[in-house]
Length: 63
Image 1 (cartoon, helix red, strand yellow):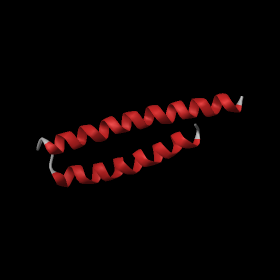
Image 2 (cartoon, rainbow, N blue to C red):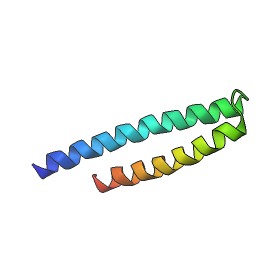
Image 3 (cartoon, rainbow, N blue to C red):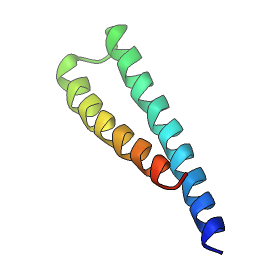
Image 4 (cartoon, one colour):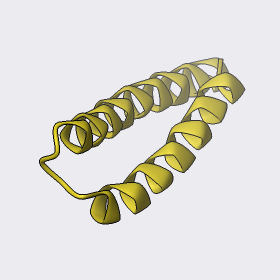
């Protein structure tokens, strides 16, 4: 029972981490291409990096 819950939480954390990484990469790519300004992208990338780290840790906890 608990094993199944842990497995489900691990899967959810992994999927969330992958989705957040895609968003992070997309913003970084748009910044690199000059489509968005540094003033807009920097706070977004900082928050995104924070959430990526948290999701990575959650994924490890539930592994």
